[in-house]
Image 1: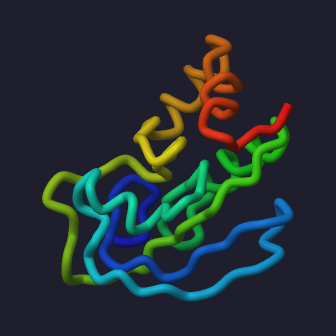
Image 2 (image 1 turned 135 degrees about the vertical axis):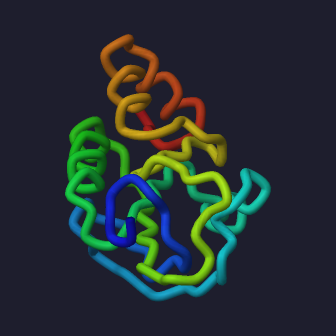
Length: 130
């Protein structure tokens, strides 16, 4: 399912952040490091909020627009399609990390938002200042 929004392929291609509209972007290569939670720290660094998706995933835009509308500024990591290195255990993409911990996919994000748990989680992680 290369190029799908739901199966991660292999190599992170680009990261984008700042300004809500991709004010800056740069390429970073981590090999096949999106395999386990331990490696998420490599991808997220010190970012309070990270969205991991495949390049061009339409649901990634939905997720980031929701987060921008709440006042958060997520770092977006897009995974490049690659025939080598498919995940041993595929994650649903886009995949959201809050404070370096897995929140989950789109369904978990919207469930947390509807239940009123998302904003407190974002505040606790430092992704929201209000």
